[in-house]
Amino acid sequence: MDIRQAGLDGLRRAEASLEKTAARVAQISTALTGEPHDYVDLSSEAVALIEVRHSFQANLKTIETADELTESTLDILG
Image (cartoon, one colour):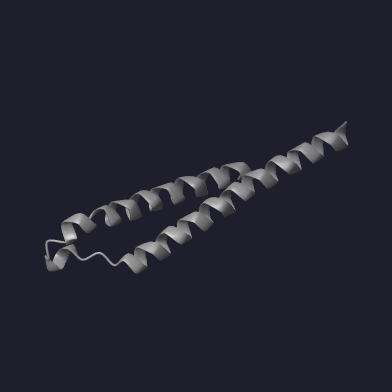
């Protein structure tokens, strides 16, 4: 598997996770009705957002490193 592709796949997974977390946080306005099934745990959602941020950063770094490796290889080859 290509390193860049792995980074892009990771970014897609992080984006999907971000969308799910955002949807749960958006339910807070409906959770204020007091319905027991509408409970949103903000601390869990905050942790999920931090995890997503780290996932984005790690996958971007993977892509940057792949670009640097390609550039170095091309420099060596002349």
